[in-house]
Image (cartoon, rainbow, N blue to C red; front, side, top):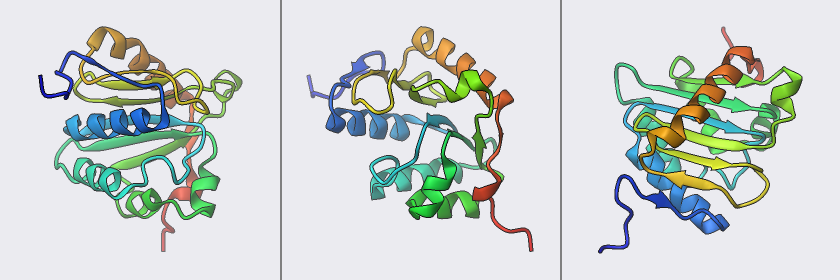
Length: 166
């Protein structure tokens, strides 16, 4: 055994370091499509050189590439100059950002990452480093994807993060 999880194995998620490791493993396993839901995008999330490189790889994977971000507070990422903002602004047709507006969605404290291979990272409370994750688990992934899709449809485009149309 190499210590690396197999494709159907769950990933440990009980500390900040384990969360970062699971996030990175899921990004590496993503081919072309990624969904991320967060209350706030701060410098501890999706900002390392490795994570930015993987996000760039996914965004430039060619036909069908898509990254969807649901952020409750996109202005925080913009104000703090998050490293992902520049990538979002360079590839606005591939990296789409929406803001939840419905009360049911605004009250949801969870965070998730869903990739196109049936892998996921789910945190019931985005402020706590506990949750569950798997590289491949379609039965666990499917309800999270359905919830994400429903929230995405109810959300509005994050205009503050879009490049200026000059």
